[in-house]
Length: 378
Image (tube, rainbow, N blue to C red; front, side, top):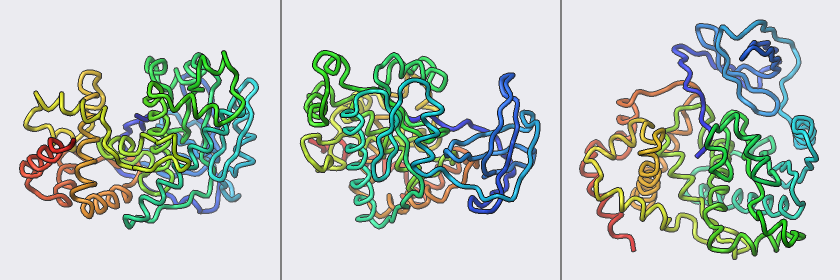
């Protein structure tokens, strides 16, 4: 799960090169409040709507009626480096937030230093494993020229208060999320009561607590969200592009469970996700005949609390099947998704056609093969 893009209608758009000279200064009025944004226009709609990226890599989808002033100067647009990002985060967040830096991440935290270091080590292991996985399959990922950002709150209550404006009621039920808008992973200290009762003084201590079976789901959720962040920052997917949710969620679930007993973290990428497998098998008992078609055609099943659990389970199962049994086609489809432009949305028919062009026109045959394969998993 990640915080998704607003479904803006940009019927005709123009794309501005990110490295072109000039900084756009856009003043808007939103919810009765004046906001000033300095950044770079990525997309300009025929009706005057804008998609702007700022130096912290936050995306601003702006409607024409919100714009009160727009001008451009001749200075060069620059994304924050790790030092500038650290200062920006500490200015933005109130309270005693500190910074922990790794090779690829800036982690802003107000919990123990040991927990921040544990998060940094976990994210770096994922970063390496993710890159190696795709390199071995013929997809050379980008190396980001900017730091990846993670916010780590010391307790669930402060995390929930921060996340409420973005997540609404869901803020209290999930331990972390990736925001397409802010480009950040946000989470809280998962050691919870153990941290309060015993005190955490080392990353090894954190690892012992979170290696318990009961902690597996919450740790997997954080890795799931960090996988989204990597996919959207290393050239696999583009923020605010029309990436089908079965693709993005299926991939994140495929990577989500680490082996915390291993120093490398991921000894078995793509192992069977037993939770999702059992969920899909329960769903399969009353699965509609058009389930594959509805999954690949649009994202509606992911947006309903009634159908979302089954959609996530089927997204994992389909991704697992295609990666294992149709790897060349899956890679081709992944490269097709990587080329998608921001704020250009496909119809359900166009999505289905794209899928069929890669995996074959006979969806009924593919669905039968898919179900046979999933039934064979032990």
